[in-house]
Length: 636
Image (cartoon, rainbow, N blue to C red):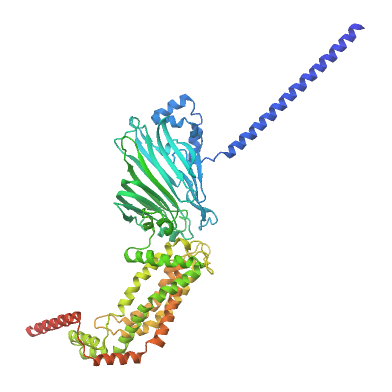
């Protein structure tokens, strides 16, 4: 019996031991599973914090994820030579490094060391993606690459190589140093310095200790490329003002054609290159001028219905010269608004020349009159009201010219019957008719060219304004009445199903319609007087008929041409024509009277006249021509 009890106790003991072992195994397994789940969760969190890799770089980085393995490094040396060292660094596994200020957000790719994204934080796109920030660089539409030859005859491109980033702070600025290393103290360096409240950043390219690795007998070839994103409402209008502008040969400013499908140019001693879009621009400046620059502009808009993402492709290729076996270039990069005041604020850089304000006197009028005056008005008035007041000031300033033009027309109108008599009397002798007509003008104190000169004087003002409104950045995103953006067209109706009228567009703008109606009534009011004051010359077309045709052609041309232009410009011409009509009515009804003009002409005829030097010379020339004509008739 004792033996049996003992056996039972043994069995119970073994059972308890087994239960204890099972509990310990279960508990250990649960702890391991819990640790594994927590580890996976942490890895997911860490992965989410890391920058996302672009499609182009993903394959390369996955492929090189074991670069620390010495075998793989040796393999890379076969293609990269000494720069396989850079691919072995931990930074080769990462993608981008971000720099951010109040104005700009920049992402610099570790592979290539160039700006991978550039976003302007305080402005929005006005294209189909309205509401998004303006993106100058995104999704590999830009590149900055250095191509060079190594001592062992390899041709390498920095866009394919890995840079090691170091981000620091210096005097409140964010400083990103990107080094393409061939060894611990042998590298090619890009250095970006982003300031808190500036669209312009410092950019340096230098090398250290590469003279034994890189062939320094030939320059490194720098290539800067950008496919310009559409950011504005009208792709046609934006593309018209998108072009390469550059400064060369000690201050000369030139540009490539914005209208050509493909345009190329080779420039020397280049100090800056601007990839200018309509209202934004990317600029590369250098303290040491590029010896040469090969520039290319390609129009990417073949069909405006489908090509709506990019406008142009710009490429600039420049050689970087070695000095003492090393590179050292101090440069600047600008990513921001094509704003005249901002660009002019960078002293001694001449960046205001990037703005298409017109050449010669037209640019002078814009720079020294229109921009300061309009800037002062818009400083305390809404932009729509500022345009109206600006128009009033311009028309008042031009009113003496308008007055002289009308007075000249009135004088010619009074003389028309006498001129008609001379035409009839000397219709068989054109030379005599011309002499007598000149005598009549002289005795009446009338200059037949006086009506033309005031009109010619208005041309510089007209052209300057035509350049001013499409280029003035402050009008962007500013609304007035139904116009949501004074820098673009004021659409009140869009045609459906992609329908477009040839030369007109896919929408109806209201301000051009109002301007066309105003110019129709203005021409209707003035053309009659002009046709009556201008007698038809023998052998010349009937100007009165041409003027009557122009009454209808001019408003139609304005209606078509301005439908896609800035609504601010159409508003200006609408108000301008209304004011001109008012000024003409005041002059005609209250200032210049036909009877007073007639009395003054008769008084002038009674006064003894002395010919001026020019008039005497003309008289002598006509008399000589008449004598020669008589001599020929006698010989016959």
